[in-house]
Length: 452
Ligand SMILES: C[S@@+](CC[C@H](N)C(=O)[O-])C[C@H]1O[C@@H](n2cnc3c(N)ncnc32)[C@H](O)[C@@H]1O
Ligand code: FES
Image (tube, rainbow, N blue to C red; front, side):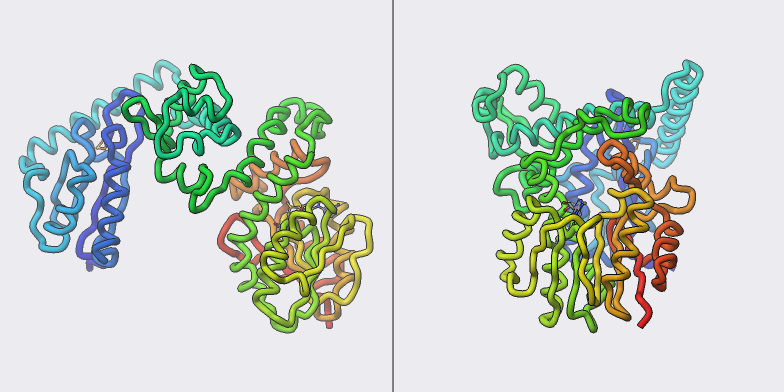
């Protein structure tokens, strides 16, 4: 049985710097081009493209293998993909000039490369060299810092469609030599392209990291720039068990970046949350620590009968106000400044939404918050908590486990919690707990219903 007419394996085996490999010879761009061409020609249901590890012809990449024909292509460039799709996949005629014909020579080359590879792995192991993945993880901060600095300096906007190092340095107010080093590193990271002494944005950096980009994410990414300072205190923080007083302070710049980051995530996830929770019977909603108001806006847009209150701190509500005004929902979304941990929450809500809040708080604070939410619910009303949910080992999902450390450097008692912990807070408050509801993205929903 063949669910597709063709199954194409394309090598994207990353190897150490200087070692021959398909990616080093441009396979990633070729794979992108091939995927795009298959899509444009409407053949995604006939041709399954799967990226794979080394095919053993590393010096001659980029390599592709096409089954069921068993055709091995080598040295494929983005310029070749239109011909392969049209001639081979559409008409059934392989592109001969790129095909390996000598099966014995092919097998010998594959075996030779495999033996060489295994010998190098054994030699590295015998020498006690760090495994590559471990080294990569340890050095990962360098590439991260390069990108964050480029965002902080707005270097992608300065490079735009092409600029010299002097022009970019002058626009960013930076040193020319230092700027050049950063620009070249960004080329190595595929976030800039360089030609004739000029640097310009790539499709990815143009879209996400430069002014006017289709999905300009700079404002929200400045939150990551701010978090860097906090993560820098991690070692001391683990020693003393608390965030350091000197950690990045939440000034106006911090708040703007933080809310922008929350807004970006929330806007993306809100449609899934609204679909999963539904608005049937919901007239009054409370959005506890509602941030930019993105979830309230999505709920209010889903039902004209729904009225919502966003409870948050004053400086955050000033930003939420702009979003609510832009959505023309000021008549149904009210902004209430207050402290969710001590101020009265109100009463009679059909839905109380608590998104990305519990991870900031300690166990006792969450127990109290869930109880106070129960009291604020109308009979039959629902408390919906959206957050990372760890499994019982507390080590997975990876993002949730790492996020706990983000809370360690930034909050007094926050961390990610397990399903069982959420369940116990909800049931001990006298609410009926649902199973976690999975939605696309890293967070899940825990729902507690107040008995009617
Ligand atoms: C991680 S954000 C989540 C925002 C929003 N719920 C979302 O999911 O996009 C946490 C929010 O809680 C607010 N917050 C923190 N402490 C608070 C408090 N004591 N009272 C009210 N709001 C608070 C913050 O200002 C921020 O908007
Ligand atoms: S890296 Fe692609 S064939 Fe070896």
